[in-house]
Length: 78
Image (cartoon, rainbow, N blue to C red; front, side, top):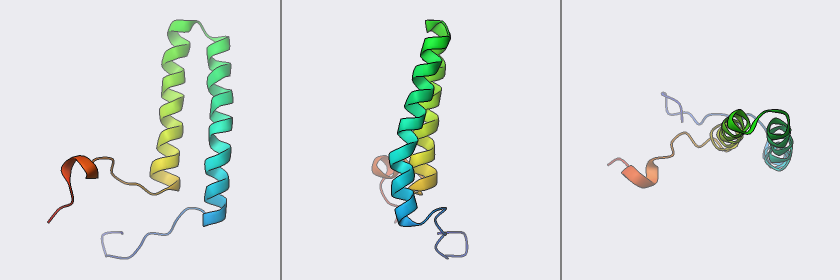
C-alpha cells in the first residue's frame, strides 16, 4: 500500500515474476562464480556475498514486494 491506502502495482505480472525468480538466481550464480574465479579469494568472497545480497534484495523487495524483513521480529502494529 502507498501512503494514500492504494495498493501498489507489481513491477511484473505474476507469470513474469515467477519466470524472473527462476532466471535471476541462475544469472547471479554465474556472475558469482565468475567473480570467484577471476579475482583473488579475499576480494572475490566479499564481492560474491555482495552479489548474493543484491540478488536476494531484488527478489524479495522488488519482485515479491516485501518491504520489511522485521514483521516477524516486531510483530504487527496495533
